[in-house]
Each structure stands twice: as structure tokens, then as C-alpha cells.
Image (cartoon, rainbow, N blue to C red; front, side, top):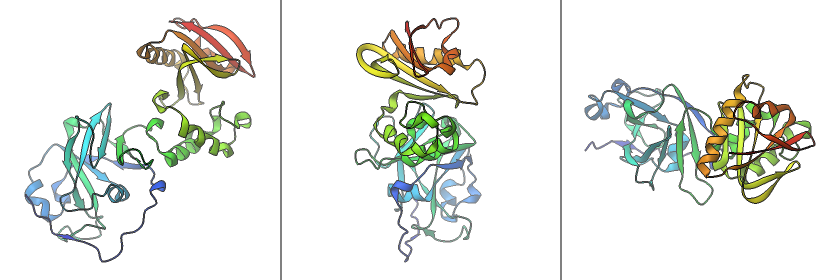
Length: 304
């Protein structure tokens, strides 16, 4: 096994505010053995068909991988790559990490454990995407292991607190989810309420469809007026279509929603929808019946 020559910096490792670690956009690229430290040449020179993942410096530090012969446990499920130090899944496998410099020093230099970045390799056949990907850090809630995920698209179910705030401000604030507190004038200043909602919501039932529609499912809940009320045996849902939603997207969304509802074993459906978006639930296979309208919000019903 390769014995790495590693230098520990005499300078104190810079402090990281874990709550401020945001998502990182990283470009994937084929592995090139000419870009690694000379210490790795003997072990990596003959490797082909691999994709290189450059880990953000902060992620390596927080996950504690700045050690000799570092590694992470990896899983690949549903087009998402998850990496953690311990790993608690039967589907996880070990991937070694390699140190790399930021091109300010020679590749013949000695590895600097504190200052260098790290990367890992996966066979191209196992990587479910290419191009630019999003690294997201998770796990400082005191209950779950620290980890990070890698995926192509922004998925709000995987976002941490700070990512959600940035994402919402940049892409969704003009049409803020109307049933959040402070929705009446559609301003961004109610973001604290958005974050309160995000901390308490069941993220397993929140979805973004093709980056233009946001829909949520509420098992064992019905709609009364313009509010949701708990009721066994019913499932409610709501959506918000954004300005970039293409014409005709409603049918696709309803199919996606109904498929999710069937997976959950429900048949009695209620939908709370703004009157401006009701076209989404009208048409062949979408025979929803209007039950009520209040404050510009409509309640429709359907039995699958």
C-alpha cells in the first residue's frame, strides 16, 4: 500500500462555521493521471475510464477526512451519490480519497494535509450524470451523521437551511408559496416564515416537477375552505406553477401526483389550488369536482 508523505501545516487550520456551509457547484471531468501528485503515479497511472469528483475544501474538513489514507463510504441511489465517514447502509462501499493541490504548487511537492483539497474516483459506468453537479452538505442537526450528496438538479428535499434560502430568493421569491405566512403581498421579507415552515415540514412529500411546478402531498388530510384539516383516509395536495411553466404542463403534473398518491395507497383526493391555476386539474383523466372557493382558493375532490 502506498505510504503517503504528508505535511501538517504549522498554521492553525482555519475555522469553519458549519451552519454557513452552502452547496457547491462542481464540474465533473475524466480522471487524468498527469494532474496528480507524483506520489500517486505508481498507483493511479494505469487507471482508465474513471470520473474525478473534486470535494470542496470545507467538506473535507468538516467530515474529518484530513488524515493519512483517507476514505469515505459511498452509495448511489436514485441518481444521487451520498458520501459519509461511517456509512449505515448495506449498499455503501468504500472509496479512497486523494489529496490534490490548487495548482499553486508543483505536483512534486509534498502533500499538505491541512491545506490541500481532496478528490475521489468512480468508474464512469457507475456515475448517473455528467457535467456540472451540486454538492450539498447535511448532518448538523445533532441527530444524523454528517454527509454530503451529489446530484445534478437542485432538489429542495436535500437542501440545508442556507441552501433553501438562497434557492428561494434566486428562483422562487417572485411567486412565493401562497399559503406561507405573509403571502398577501408576495414579498421576500417573509423569508423567516418560509424557513420556519421548512424546518417543520415532512420533506418526503415535497416535490419540484421539472423546475417549474412545486407540489406537496398531505396524507390523512382534507381541505376545508382555504385550510388543511386532518382527516383519516383522505390525501390532499396543492401546487404552485411558476412563470416559466410551459403550456400543458398541468396534465403531466396531475399524472405525477396521482402516481405518488397511488403509491401511498390513497384514493380519496382533495386539492387546494389557487383559482389562477385551476387549468392544471381540468381535462381528460382529471375530472375533479369543485367543492368550495374561498379567498381565491378552490377546493376540488376526486376519487381515483
